[in-house]
Image (cartoon, helix red, strand yellow):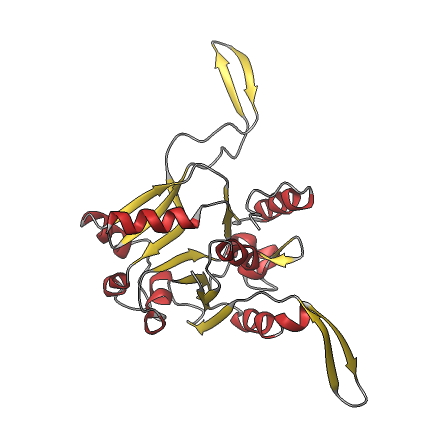
Length: 261
């Protein structure tokens, strides 16, 4: 099974970082967030990636060359080497690179999410995983895939209940009875962005201007072809610098829930 990662967004809400590099390359614990996502998939037997289990495709858009350069030089970065400048020779002493195969597809900087997915259709030959390059969690990918296969629908989306973002005041008449620091959310489920799809979803995408979260997903739901798998564990999207700093703090203190490896 292959995994497709959408890594082409502009990341305007985290512009403090994304004006320098694409959002999926923003680092948590010294590694790009896309690396954390791939490590998690790898724990569930997916080691080949298509970036846009076993195969990952990365859809590259905004500053996509930086993503390509990162993976092109990954083995060098992860290895102990001696570089003989006079003779232009490099000797690798030990390598610790992942066993991943990564396909990077240039999908254009302005292509919408649906268009990016459509452009990798030629690299997909069966059921595939799909996610965004800016969210981490301790999702059980194995159970998600098994649920999708059991349901027999065109696509499955992982649903999450996000935690509250702000502290809340519990008011009793004209006084505050207690203060809740970032209470649980309002009970509503949202898409966590981890999908399992059948190749037939490509037929629901008309072209580069198609937003996957609009007509394709709405059509799947209306036709009864969109299953849901509920995840009640950790999940966090990195939308803002505040989100990035919160994830960095979790990693630095050794309490990152998404570190399943």
